[in-house]
Image 1 (cartoon, rainbow, N blue to C red):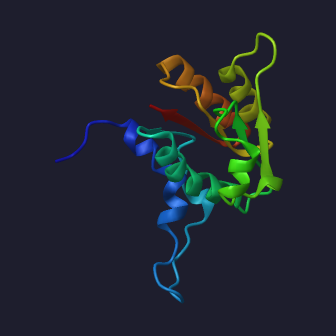
Image 2: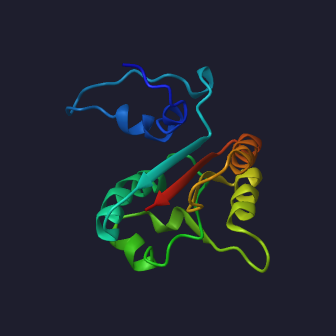
Length: 157
């Protein structure tokens, strides 16, 4: 049975790197040049359950993103209070490649996410914006396109 939910396809783009890893030592995987395809620039990850379990699932994703070969930052926009500097360290993230940003004044987390994406100084901007409407999603997509970056929205439930 084929799924009719197109947004699920967009969720795969950030995980292509995981799927391309060799399964056995010594195995080689043929690489597709990055310019030969246009990856999706927006992905969402929805995690539900006990906070500890959600953090256990989130840690390897963020760890992999923090180790990207891209010289730009992994930017976390207004992460939950439970994602402390100690948690980032204990989860094995490369903290030298991570920016933690919080909105200031009347600026929203969405506005800050779009700004970080548009500037192009981050390879991936991770936000915790909750459920997004079509307008917010389009803003993130346009900003990610402009900055040649990836937008990952994490929904914790």
